[in-house]
Length: 240
Image (cartoon, rainbow, N blue to C red):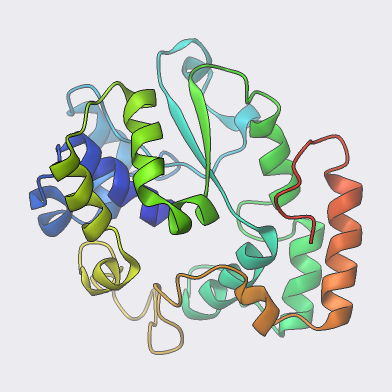
């Protein structure tokens, strides 16, 4: 969902002009806060700057907490996150080999994966959900009603979008179109780093793919851990 949101926000700020998403790779267009190379890129850009991050709330830079920065937090069914992460680990050479699905499943539940525990991450950002500078958007919501998401985001970001611009963004951010866009599908990354012959970066773009990968035992185990870890969070989107 992160790459998807990068595309959406890029188009909101370009007022539907496709030039940025067709000429600038997403990792340069909306650079990662965690990457050293991003520092020099961001310092030369005029405000508002678009930045991506996978950091927990408590790990954000100190300046963030007193800044006027707005955050769009993308959340997705953790079972689908697990499956997507498994295939990503299998094609990206710069992360740990996932091993078997059973092995990765256990690592995910224990938070021993890239970016750490999904449960810790979501809890950290959900705890401040009432902050007016933060908005939560689900992957499932984007898939079901992108137009509604655009209206919500445009209001949050203070950007007025015409119906024509909304239609352009909805069309450009469809899975089939993004999958063909070299600026977004990571095909520009050398095969030695991301071997898309093993698994494509844009794999399916659907909800509930976990059902094609989990056994009954996997689902029962995951549900148990989910209820234990998320019991203080009023989030019922993914309790089945």
